[in-house]
Length: 141
Image (cartoon, rainbow, N blue to C red; front, side, top):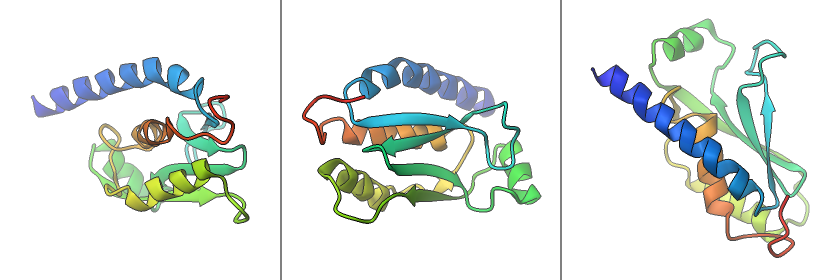
């Protein structure tokens, strides 16, 4: 069925993500930070954020994450409107932060879906986009 195919493709993406993230993160001034879902239990950190240059945080969440209708739609594997949150200093910025902000501006799929466009896919795509930019040459953490 199409749902089984979507689940299988999502599992494949997750495996690829888990294999690539340590390699990419080892090469960048970018860190990934796990946290609980909005309104979720603190002991279950399954949401991922991208931390760029130590103090700029980017993530992708449902627009109305705490709304029961949003949760019901996500659990039925329906897409919901998403939003990219960007937190950080608005002072002079490094090239990698500017590139991250450009990625956010150009990120076209703003509908969040648990299997195909979520915080994990957003983080992977941002890491891929930032792979060639660093504030410290290639000395990434």
